[in-house]
Length: 114
Length: 113
Image 1 (cartoon, one colour):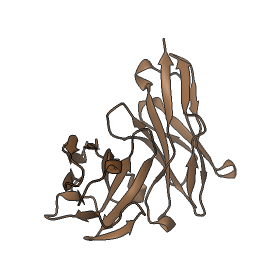
Image 2 (cartoon, rainbow over the protein chains, first blue to last red; image 1 turned 30 degrees about the vertical axis):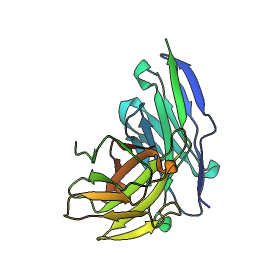
Image 3 (cartoon, rainbow over the protein chains, first blue to last red; image 1 turned 135 degrees about the horizontal axis):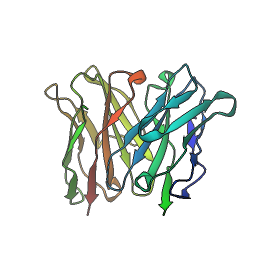
């Protein structure tokens, strides 16, 4: 079965520090991968996506993610975190072979301390 | 930037009542989805809809659930007889195709009392 693991439930970083949020997936097909961000009570905003090509993808708000097929990972990074980045981050994976529905990870809550 | 619009943003309903959650997907999108997120849990796929029919549904999407695209712009999720465990945030999403990414609405928070 397809699955997505975000091993960190909560992460706290200082404002200005770098950030890496982990995502690992288990899929029997070539996946496409997404990161979404959700502020409290809000919807899901797409940060970035990977389908093919360059394995390092750039997204909005200064985020980037790297697809590593050998490690089945798609970690999200930001070099310098801002207080407004505090939110919950979801990794999601899909594949045409599985009907294009997305399977989400459990989410990582990011807290930013000043 | 085009948006997926969901109404209402909050709905409180009594157990056993029918509810209809409404979504207006992005106008040139072809594929439509409903997902739900029970408080504190993962976002879960419910159903996908393409070419005026359901293309896939999850185990959650039982006979109490139905979807419809009645007029070419709205996309609705109906829960026939709500249960307490249907309380969740329901998200609508749409896409032109997977390589374009999926746009999600802001969600409808359904509370069944």
